[in-house]
Amino acid sequence: MGLSWGRTVAAFQQTAKDAARDNGRETEKIVDDVGRLALRDARSGTPVKSGRLRAGWELKQRKSGENRVDEIENNVSYGAAVEYGTSKTKPRRMLAKAMRRARARLMKRLKRNLNRISNGFNR
Image 1: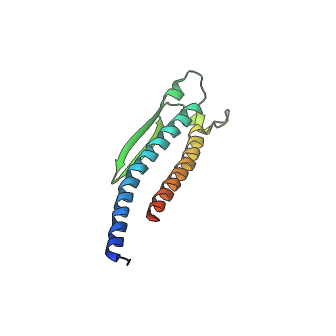
Image 2 (image 1 turned 30 degrees about the horizontal axis):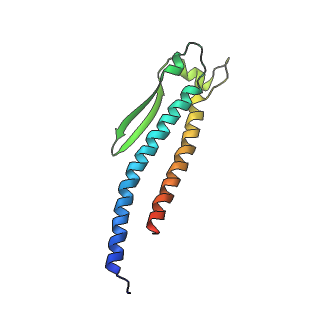
Image 3 (image 1 turned 60 degrees about the vertical axis):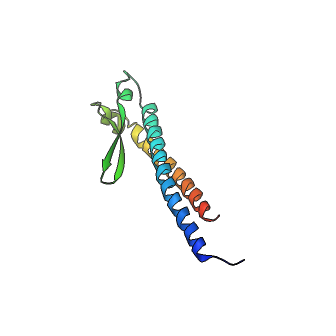
């Protein structure tokens, strides 16, 4: 039994095309999941007096060229004072903490996805 180079290259090319398509879909799903979890973390880490600041968190998605950008915003006027603190209050860092956790989740999930894809090439 001989090695058919043409068939091997064609199989590799098809696997690469499938992996790229699947990776794009999976990456979108990962980014969606991590964005929702970051929003949840920001909300749950927000101190509550009236509930207005906690309720003010939003996840916004927009396009920037070919890329999608997810932004977590809070437009409540005193949000920055709670996040960064003032001369009389300590910083709560609810968004900073949520983003740190989101980055760690994102890297872990993307690495797992890349490992899955690279294992597909080893078949």
